[in-house]
Amino acid sequence: MSDDMLAADKTTLRALARDRRRNFVATIDPLAHRLAFKMIPSPLARHLEPAKVVALYMGLDEEAPAQRLAAQLQAMGKIVALPRVLDRLGSMDFLEWQPEDQLVPGPFRTSHPEPKGAPVLPDAIIAPLVGFDRGMNRLGQGGGYYDRAFARFPDALRVGLAWSAQEIDAVPVDPWDLPLHAILTEVELIEGPEL
Image 1 (cartoon, rainbow, N blue to C red):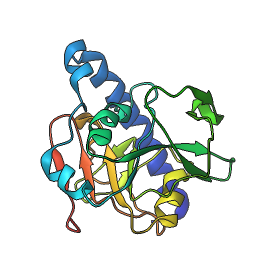
Image 2 (cartoon, one colour; image 1 turned 90 degrees about the horizontal axis):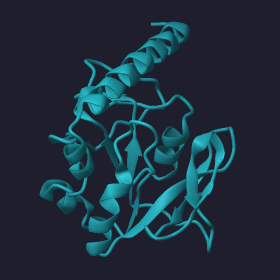
Image 3 (spheres, rainbow, N blue to C red; image 1 turned 45 degrees about the vertical axis):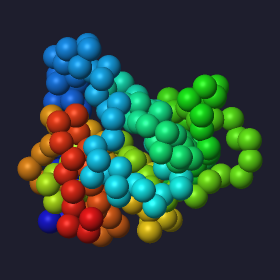
Image 4 (cartoon, rainbow, N blue to C red; image 1 turned 90 degrees about the vertical axis):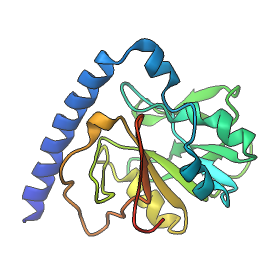
């Protein structure tokens, strides 16, 4: 498959996956939506046990709300961090975050904590995604921010967070794409072969 065809396939899949996610979230019972992602399943908690710093994200629009995992992670003694987008080239770092911290606006409608010290180095990265497959492949927004973060922190546990409706048959994979170790949806934890 040519690079142009692969890019077109990813673009088409992103549009389809966003539509599926939007339609799914519109049909969820509001109580079920509020309760989703409040708890970390015990198999994932076990894999997170060695991590000192866990990077989350602030969900936008219909994204699965990773920030809801913060309380349980903090109860487990973890330092919680959020990404800070640094430039349009796909660079970001991670800043320590407490749920009561004021967030400041960043590029692309993102928000991040006010920097209080040096960025932290994540041992686990819980990443948003547009689509995923059972091969542990992640279809992101297309900016490459998480691809670069995964490459910068190759030993970090890579966990995708998504609604079950975001599953697709097969995500096209580029040479730089690293597979996830696990994917957490509102109904299941999918563990990859590396776990």
